[in-house]
Length: 322
Image (tube, rainbow, N blue to C red; front, side, top):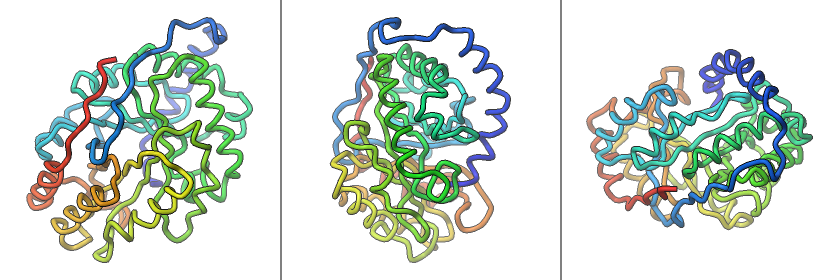
């Protein structure tokens, strides 16, 4: 969703000089120049295995995640943050996540970058440095690149970048990480749920060799919204060509739906019915129209109780110790 660029851009500008300095100070790393690959993997995902959260605190603080866990009645096993291009991997935060028996999920967005340049190798020094940081971390990390690319609101998305160019960039990144031995990455191909104005999702598909999980972002924003209308059609469309686990990679139920209790119950029921592997709740307060509501479960006792009930139906997977 478009607002996230505002939260990332300021950090990117400050980080560019530091990251570039580190990148250019390091020698180019070839296939034989790094230590052995990290062996950490995630357990084979099953239906309703993951409960995740995005908070406003990470990656600088974990306190808001702890508060969410208390409200949800269950500790999340996926904890997310958004990374701008040329930012370093947040190793310290990822360690904190791992210490809480959870897995870091990161959406990595090429803002202020050339997607064609990524595909052509123009950012390979930066990518190698990032891949080496992830590999040395040694625990599973879920990484999505250029999320919601089938929508129009991001510079790397539909109407701005040709799907073939995006696919080439995706494949280049995945191949480079594997060459660097960063085999502890779960690659999450993240699309926006179909809505008016989004493009055909299949055109952006990098191929099964380059994707581990499919992520679908979608929100309940109106009283008429339900799991079938928000997610059902997109899940059905994706499963025609992508036989991968499906994660509701960014979702929430806003107060404008009317009964949050009923809609949250519907969300969890749909999660089970469609055999998705879980959800990542966008637990952040916003106040800028229909698509920017107060999504926090803590904002309403009724919503909190409904979420706790839904979360109790999940049998959560544990991350590998690496």
